[in-house]
Length: 315
Image (tube, rainbow, N blue to C red; front, side, top):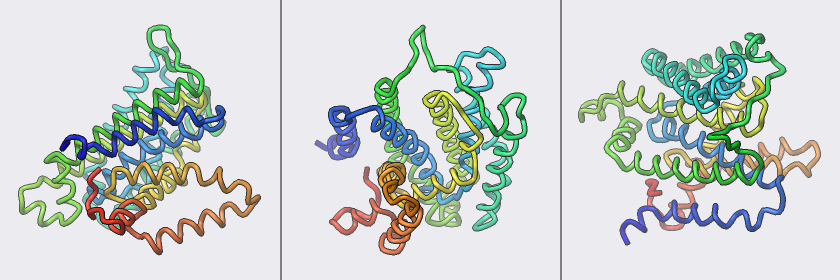
């Protein structure tokens, strides 16, 4: 019974994912749900950094771009297997995050935000300028993702692959947050001085969570590139980073399932507002303003508190 209560959210998510194909009428809706799942996993990693550790990142799309272009460039130009290319992309993104984390996280407030923004912009510029390998602004095609002669193709196959990856990611994040590592992140967010007094190595934990979130982003950048079959520099631009941060804030910072809700809402909302014919941006902005004014902690924490839940995310 205790196990059921602890993993209630995961069981509900698994049930929804199992039943959802019964109500999806065509590939268009499968495509939207797949994009929701991809965004949810990226936002989950970003929420671990922003919501739980309290460290801002405005250039996270740069790591997505590294993963996407690694999985495009290495098989196309160097003959690598796509899975090895995905691993290389995640390793490169993690290495860059590890190298730059120490100098970046010595900064605080808007200086930290500007540093991460600059990192994302540099990555996007490199992708656009290295046209011989990346195709420049026009982008480049991506080979199909396959294993042992079997290629993942079609929306239904991708749906089940992303459903499994989504469940695993949320299970891993839930266990991470409930671990001593997760408690150290919460302490770091609450007060760096107090956490350091209690024996938390704040530099090591900042570095570790930044590398982990970069790994999440790069891996899903590779998955996105294989799913779409084509990649352009837009995947690494500033506006994509801001969109991801907005998903974290709207869903709820320091909320595992807030990451899912934020990704689902802000992925589906542009499609739902397309009927407004030119006014969708205004309506979209108004909805975000409403959420920030009346639910400043995000949807999931605010609703959980209002309907009797605890203020702390329980998953």
